[in-house]
Length: 90
Image (cartoon, rainbow, N blue to C red; front, side, top):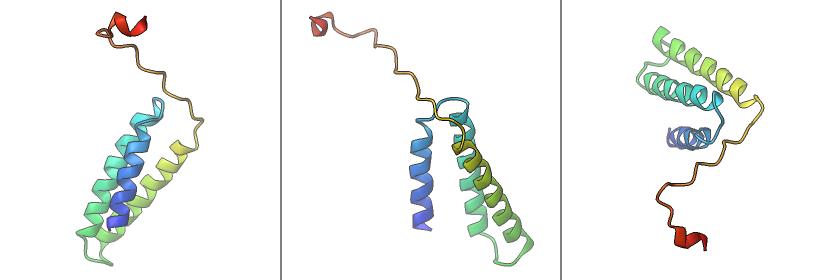
């Protein structure tokens, strides 16, 4: 469980570096995947609820991998901050 939580956290941080619209799609799916993992952990093994949670998690994993396979485009650098000192450019 700890490894899964760490993997989700790391993936979430890395997904924030993706270009749009892949970033938003990935982050939304990661939140849903986390919710599904929690739902699965609260389910009794072998019950319909547990099987459905597992199937939902697998579907979300497929969707995340499909997004990961899209071409990567780096995000543009942020605009310079308006409060940058002129002295620093001399």
